[in-house]
Amino acid sequence: MIKGLAITPPAIGRISIGKVVEKQGKRLPEKDDEFTITTQIQTREGWVHHPLDESLRKAPGTKLRAIPIRLLFDEVDLNLRANYTLFDRSSGRQVCVGNGESCKRVTSSGVESLPCPAPYACEFGQGVCKPYGRLNVRIGDEDELGTFVLRTTGFNSIRTLMARLTYFFALSGGMLSCLPLELRLRGKSTTQSHRTPIYYVDLTTRSGATMADALAEAKAERERRRDSGFNQAGLDLAARVGFANGAFEELDEDGRFCAEEFFTEEQDNESSVEQENVAAIPQQHLEDRLGTRLKQSRSMTTTR
Image (cartoon, rainbow, N blue to C red):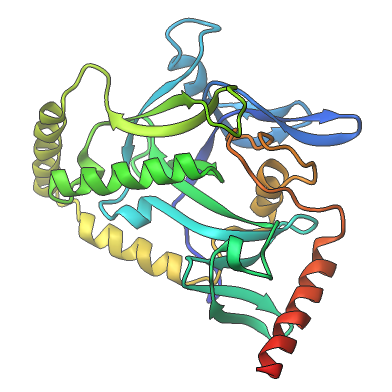
């Protein structure tokens, strides 16, 4: 295994809420009120839609606001990885990733482990560091290891998804990968949205099914897999080892798309594709700001 390279779940597509459009010579996120399922191919017109995007709509042209899914892993934090993350928008590289207690940060000496006080209390990351989550899900049964990736920087989506996954894990006795679930798009208004609806992602049992129905199906699915020799515990362990093999999860090429969608240069309270309040990266080049903050941080440490 190549050291330093995170081995992540195979991705065959993306799930997004909105798109990036060009306005006055700048590429900016545009809000939307539905899911879009795409391939991993991007053209000048945008991401190419996956065939599932059309087949899951009840009728041509209708809004896609619910997607039937299954999870790949039983462990919560393997399905949804959420961290405070700081991207260098020019290169797409992750510069700092933390959990509110500790972080991995790129410095002149390499990747260092440092304390992480969260963005609002961190001099290094204020204004450029955000919560960033990646949820891998399966859609359909054609590829049992292939996943679609939903990326979000929204507190509402991350908090809701983490709560749902934790509760489903507890209720099912750890059978997350066997539960028939559904991603749903929900709307809400906040004081910051000025009564304009913002949208976030929720995770529920499938439409028309109760929790008891979902648990019964999960139990049957677990027994079927066990009889066939499917080793879910082994799969979860392999995934955990793969994630731990690299300091950062996103490759530079994927990071560029993430920075474009979620870490924009424009100051707009509702500018992200996930339509939740985000902080914008100032016009000054990020590398210059990071260098300045790193020097200040080291200077303060030396003074103390």
